[in-house]
Image (tube, rainbow, N blue to C red; front, side, top):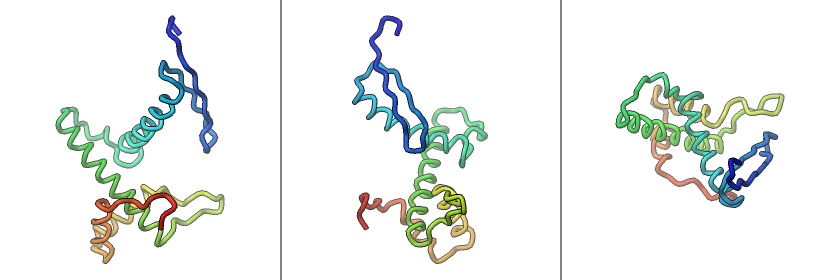
Length: 140
């Protein structure tokens, strides 16, 4: 492309979407870099569009935006960590079509907000959760 050697990589994700990438990195480096980038893209998509609506704040000063993003990432971590813990106790309901009634993020956010609002007995445990590590995959 434009006189440069490019590597093309195509991959079908489990959801069925096709991902095509053209890059000057090696195929292996591309896979590793894209996995890291994809998690960052999904996080910012959540912050901007889905749950936190970052763009509506109107904040443009870099130091304030950095502080706000940091707080939003901590809130996202709290919601996700809490939802994984809560899902192990009370699983998210599966609808008739086979999909979950709500996402893990939404489940954690609703439960955390509810616990904060009504000072439920699970509140201290939910507050401590973000500082506890996730279990290794397959571990109890």
